[in-house]
Length: 128
Image (cartoon, rainbow, N blue to C red; front, side):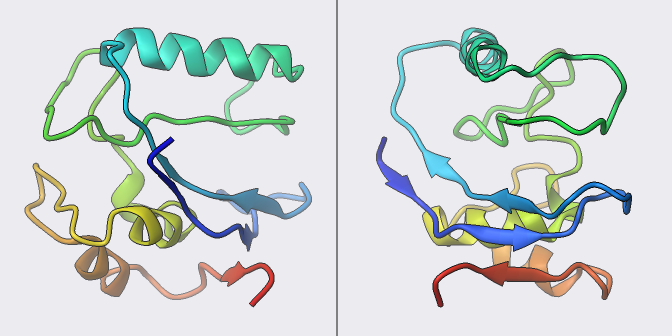
C-alpha cells in the first residue's frame, strides 16, 4: 500500500435504513491488471462474508476499484468508476490519497468534483 486515507463516516447512498458506513481509500502498487485486481478485491469481500445479490444491499465489506492510472475503460471493470464523481463518500477519502488526481474523462480535479457535489451528502472524518 502506498497511502491510505483517514476513515470517514457517511450515510448510505442511496438513502436507506441501513446503518452508517465507514469509508476510506487506498493507493496501491500492483502488477495485476485492472480486471485481476477487481477480482482480487471481490475475493477479499467474499472472505469477509459478502454475498453479491441485490444492488445496494447491506454488506460487511465493499471494495471498489476507483481508477487505475489514467486508464479509460467501458468494459468491466469500467474505469474510472462510473459514479465516483457523484459521491462524497468516495471523493473525500480520494482527496486524502490523491489530491492532485484528475478524472481522465471529466478533466476535473478531486477538489473540483467535491465542489460540484449536491448538498446533503454528509461526510464526517473519524478521529478529528
